[in-house]
Length: 130
Image 1 (tube, rainbow, N blue to C red):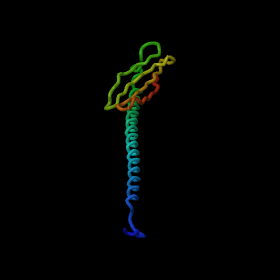
Image 2: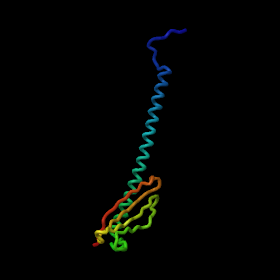
Image 3: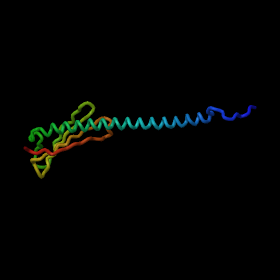
Image 4: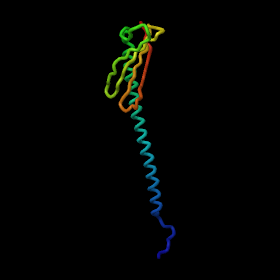
């Protein structure tokens, strides 16, 4: 049997295996972080597009003739426009006539998209009779 030499240079097999295990754990953690950040970035992009679509439609409706936004009847009523698809996004508009003031309408634009898990972006404003 050989004698152990002192001041040997290099790493033992155990040290190499420990280093590889540590790198594997670090790699797994980094992969999970990057995967989650990609999901968050994608969802944030979808929310931004939905918000921009709602804002654009809301601005278009603010410029509409007040009579076109009016719902019929003397009671508080809601007028709903049919859902409209724009790419992967679907928006619909609700116009609520408050009982207290018939010269005021609340216009609400709702937007959702596939994979939203039922989440909806809603923006609203008040439109007065000019």
